[in-house]
Image 1 (spheres, rainbow, N blue to C red):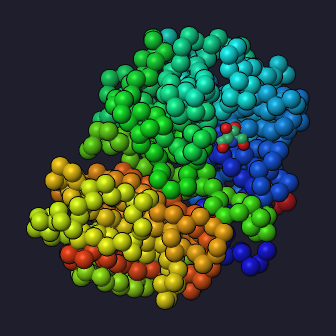
Image 2: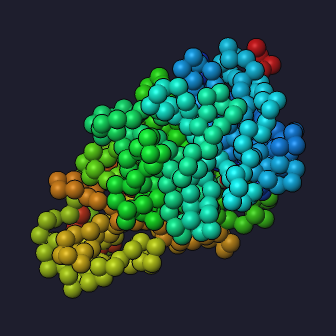
Image 3: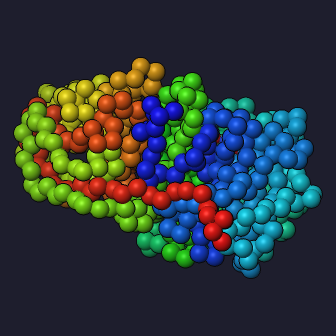
Length: 541
Ligand code: DQQ
């Protein structure tokens, strides 16, 4: 449908047609990054899922390959669901995934590449003894899915995986041990359980270094290492994580802060982002995160436009050494290959209520970095105008709601008259204890003149440390805006549907809608060229 074609992204990964959901089994092999993904070849809505497959040299330009796996056995005939890759020390690749059986039971299955010397890993073999795991007693047959990448036990010989489930309303992660990935023992207890969080989908479990900036292989543990446990909550469709310590002898992961436990504490992303999965890139020593950006329009519109969903720009994940209780997510540096001409702004003064247009040649494809400062004295005597220490982005009314110290930020994918636009901004309040608190928000209330799309305000509090400016980065790509605050301490992905602010008609602005302070803005805005994403040229080989 030509009418909706501008919504297609220029440098985010998406298939040519039809429905995509979770990223699956990401890995690096013989010079290529591999991305598999939940894909319905039949239509633009979820259905009988196959594994789509694409490869890239740089995580940005992609070549579509034939499906890696399709539903063709009794144990996955209703869908080849989400799974993860493990690269063994001898270079073998093991893929574990969930099969939805002919009678809708969730089972775990093993697959491996037919030919490891093929850099494209075109052919996948399903193990003849599949399924390798069925739901254990006491676990619902529809509550047992999405095996993780395996990690080695301290003896260096056995492997473990975890699989999300639930018991009544408690979200749990079951742990299995194996030597050959064909037969498994279930360990007693759970890796972790959190009451009230419901079914845990797409659990991810990986170490982060507290002292180094590189990522860690999934099996690393020891002093100076924390473990991230992530669950995708089926009940509210968000990815929650927590930092903690993994004790492999007790088979337990303990959160650092029980009040920030999995499912009740921090999220990877405060916008539309789900079913994410990391992998360890052994070449560049990065832990890289993929996530599914869901649609927020109607299924009818998805069918009309012929496709649904996009993958996020892959992000590196590291421990936030400065706060000690966060992670830092940042777009992989390869995305910067797409930066072309730029415009800089330096110490631009924005008085209360000001809006300043920025020049851009490709205003729907941008990489924007901006930092803001407000005068320190402004924090004093603000209590009356910011009494609302309970400010929160989602209930705030958005960027039109003025306070003494905010909002200020950028407006992207706006049209000339600002009848459409998506403000990404900071809003500073005096917290209950008299200390300043900063909120990072993305306001979709006027992101589209279409009527049947979600229009909400996303966001959360973000720690701003002494000496830090308010800083943001937004990757703008037609109908996706991925925004990072404070160097990646908070992330908000917006899936929006502009009807006027499209292609060259889009505009970008700096704004300060605070009533009581001026802010100064500095930054840079790059036009982004399109990524090359197309079918693998087999006919040219
Ligand atoms: N999507 C897959 C499941 C997973 C869910 C099915 C999460 O394996 O739990 O398409 O989006």
